[in-house]
Image 1 (cartoon, rainbow, N blue to C red):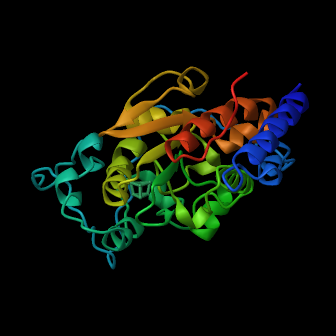
Image 2 (cartoon, rainbow, N blue to C red; image 1 turned 180 degrees about the vertical axis):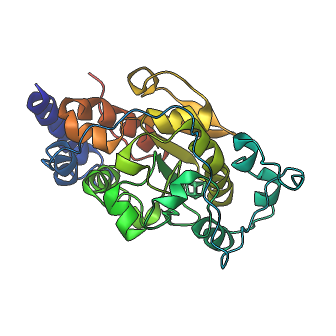
Length: 282
Ligand code: SF4
């Protein structure tokens, strides 16, 4: 069924190539995405209940760069957990560039994920990208390399980006949390709350024309939606005036290959915004 759909899609694209020379999708690049046989990524573990463990103290040699917007505690009195990991939006708003933001995030220990990470995964790409992809959080490969989407799911994301007629270097790629949740579990609400200010600042600084949210976790934590990705995907949402397209996470597509058909339909909607879709109806 998927093969049948793919072949008919390729036929449409070839027809368009004849009608609109120089403007159509390269069928070979699309084939790379649709027929990718990268081994699947193991299923994600559910998010834990709100974090109860104490926040690890920042190393003495690395001062916390962004003070939390709370009053200083009286001696011997612990701040509540939520206050200790609360984001500091006012402080972040003074950050004027990604280069300025990066070292702050790399030194961050605002949530318990700092204790188990190997590297902070800040994000990468064109600092003025028109198109931004946002995932959930780093996995094993990303944690080891300090770069987003470099593992098996990242390889598939590269193919999705190429099928959309963008180069990876042309887009910006980031995650909701910048440190790997142990065992690739879903970030907890406290962890996401501690980190989301960094992502929001990245969006503000990049100012993309369109955001693609990869998976339900990104939609849930950035937009506050509680529905599953099957219900959310394919419908335009918005974040501070920026059109947002939710779609499946590449890791899910590696496990559920049949969902590539829906993902490709979502990505085509994004391509239309950039004048890159020439798909015939009917
Ligand atoms: S996940 Fe975010 S908030 Fe938590 S330590 Fe890493 S950078 Fe800081």
